[in-house]
Length: 405
Image (tube, rainbow, N blue to C red; front, side, top):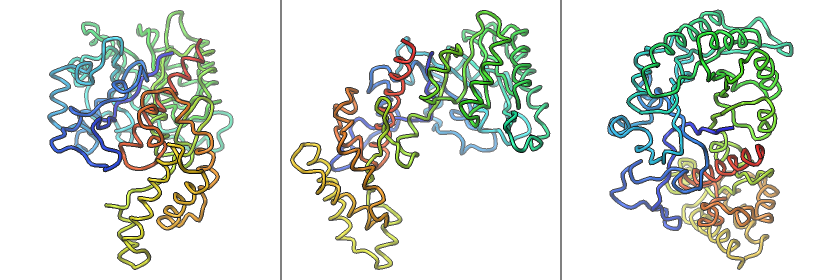
């Protein structure tokens, strides 16, 4: 099963100094940064790029993550050169349907989407779809609360897929048709229609909110209607516990940002290592921290004290990594700073203790953990947090590889 990582301008500065936490002057974003595949040995099979992320949604330019210069360079160089990907990686393109899910119709045309794929020189292009916001099965409590335009959205998605397939035949990318729906029957009907059009690759969209059992039941039903050779891609699904079940269901590929986001969005499960997850150790930066500024201005804490405790917490962790400091005094330093800053009152004690006792970063052989040591376990700033996310991508990909051996 192939794994695609959705691009959202996720890269890190290779020159970042983890002690001074300063950036070299003259650094150019993206051009001078590095992606996960430049730091690690194959953390995914390819990237998924979205028109909505690259070019934005008409009328809502804030949706784009790309500067004009980056966008033009992507189209001039093509995706592989822009992302510095070797040709054994693939690039898939989609419309970014979640970005316009609240609209009555997609904000751009099929021609515009194909033009985006051609300019970016993608390997696979997904048809223009419109998500149905809601799914119901026999376990759903409120079966009558589905959106009124659910049939319209599905019909629109299928009509777009039909036109997209015809218009993309002269292009160099493989066309993928999107199946949308609001229950098993409507999804199955979409898949059957796409196969009749001639699609050999079908993406199942709008299933991010479904639980794992719902997803597996849906795919199981769809499989009953699949023609031999038809391959399925699951949009937005990257759950480690699902990998073996998806294997048995014959899923061809998936995409997901979950392993990366787990590094900084999950409260206690920030670092993946095999079947285990660990809490990162939070040592927030005091400089530029609005919470700290408010606490200082209110007189609750003194600036000199907070800076001293912050420095002590960081030094304690580094000393522990070098095995010149014991776990108890390390925890005491970290928690003293955390308690003063966030008033957690040692809520994190047991999670942090488990992380420090197990030392998962020393057991991991990925390039990031080998180079950074304990820095990868510290929840502090984008440079550390994204590197931990990159580690998670690598670990997730290794998990998938083991599941399919």
